Length: 278
Image (cartoon, rainbow, N blue to C red; front, top):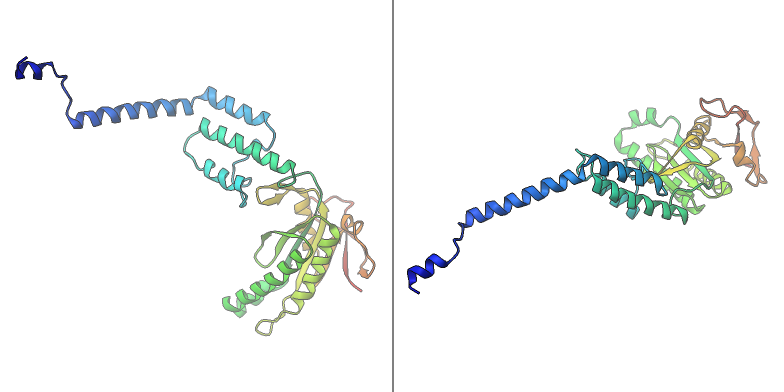
């Protein structure tokens, strides 16, 4: 066979640029098909229906439910951020798995459950007015000192700080007695703080209820009631609701006259009592 005959028998190779364009075209077609499947209404309906049938919060994945630093919450935030501009079967199935994971964690006591808790709210009376006059540096110094005092009291009594609320905190406790002891200790510690000649005046409220845990936060009627219990306290007062008073040892405590909690959304029969150490 001559050289010319051998060259004619070899398959014709397209230029390198043509090969690249053909590969890119195949990839684009595969991507378009994948997106088509990922957004197909029928498959989306199946994925969402699955989430409604498996245990857990079927809306797990939104900003409220993924607030926190547990592994499932961190991963869920990443999955929720996938293709936010369109619905996605892959995202729904991913969240379904995380929803089940979260539910199993909750069932073993590491997440939301149906157990009752003591809810503590604190804040400083008159802080904002003082801070306007004192300036940012003094206000920050005071907030740090107050924060350290309250956090130490909460942790000492086996509580957990859920969030910081400017000049106050929200904390939860498994035992009502621990919440009350923490509030009274925090009151004493805050009362000993002085910054630029100013002594902060803290108030606190404790309520016993069954809050709903969502992500790293707690929501629900009992959380709102606990905040209203704190709102009705005066400066340097700790106020507790009747359900808390029923669950604590009042020996060594002074209790004021019981009052009905007059707050929107609070049960009409709910009463509160200001307490202090004898």
